[in-house]
Image (cartoon, rainbow, N blue to C red; front, top):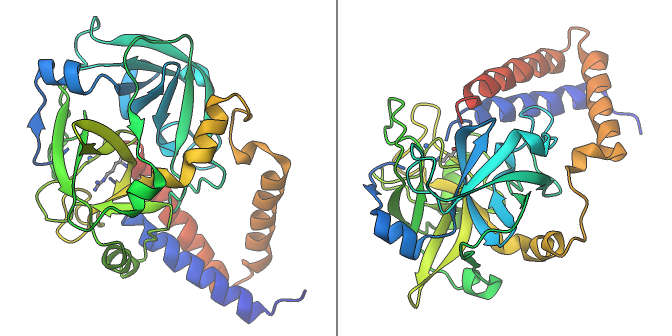
Length: 329
Ligand code: ARG
């Protein structure tokens, strides 16, 4: 198939704009919440897990089986390639409360990292990963909400999100003690359109919650659970993933937090926990390497002064900026 230079230019230009827009999206931190009491954590949230990267608390997570932890793919992958990093970089503290107290919770190392097929480092589509722990823990896992219950959620339903993420919208204030906040399940179409207007994708693998300009998850909360209290039991609905605008990454009015839609991954999750999947990322397999090469050759082929080439460069620099900012995620 022969593509005209014009077509290629337009495609690259669009892609470039998309990437620049996505920058607005790159930063994402619990705002407007309250500190959880130790007794509440112990009794009601035994599955809350801190994910440590090289010993440093970096993301939230949740215990979904006695040897399995759920988190965001962007917490456990290379920022540029989306490839899962070595399990040896990671450890977890299940049932953690105070990050500053090493006796809190059950510490385990991670032996395997599983990243969902189609995880996209730019749009954050399929932002979900599962970690296998070095041995079982005794804390109780969280229940995942069924697809039918998810589909029955109505706009305005109160959900709860928790984590050790930033508590400030304009400074870095990272707490040691677990915090929680309630956010409302948001209308999907409204949210999608709102983000589309700034060039960011909200896919069918995501849902939105919050947007009142006051309460939200924030940087450092990623990978942690958002849940609904159903008949006295918390059910996990999603995973903290992203959200925000270029000007304000958390609690930006009308820009809800964006969460991974867990109900879309139930069969994959069961399959991983049954030992039927191979650890790593789709990017580990050959087809994806070839894809990457193809993108590389398109860029050099079109960089001969075409508008598309210019936008491709812009796109890359935009991406670079986004990457740099996402280091603090
Ligand atoms: N990406 C962020 C993290 O890695 C979470 C962002 C959530 N943002 C939001 N506005 N709710 O910790």
